[in-house]
Each structure stands twice: as C-alpha cells, then as structure tokens.
Length: 106
Image (tube, rainbow, N blue to C red; front, side):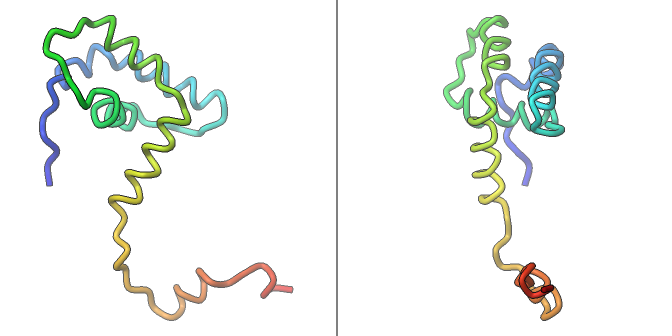
C-alpha cells in the first residue's frame, strides 16, 4: 500500500541537510544509525499531523532540529508494533530457539 503524499514532501530535499545533522547527532550520542527517511516519516506522521500550507521554512527546520530522541524512539517502537505481523507461523526449531534460555546451557 502506497503512502499518501504529504503537503511538506516537496521540502524533503531542502531539509535533508538538517535531517542528516539530526541523524548524526543521535548516532554520536549512541543510538546507532538512524535513516533520514525515518526522521522524515516521524515528522510527517507525528509532528506535522496538522499541516499548514503557509508554513515558513524556518519553522520546518526548527521542527527537524527540535526532534527529541525519546519521542522518536517511542514513535518508532509503536510503528514497529503496528506493522509487525503477529500471525507468523513458527516451526518447532524456531520456537525452541526463541524459548531457549541461558540457564538451559548450564
């Protein structure tokens, strides 16, 4: 299913340096590699839910630079749960691997 076009999608190229900067900031503080597209989706789905056509560029840049890692990680976790298929069939070997504990090795 294709995602609907967002009114601010036209600004992605202009905001990409700010998005890269924010992704690098999160990586520097120990959160691993975060993709600019993931930050962009967070902004579109969470921050820019109520979009305005007459928004100024400095407001968009400010929104990018104001992303807090906790908000982003919470959003990412919820989105992952929403899109994960819980109806996955596991064979016996996969089920045992999931349920296998460290205590079993002792």
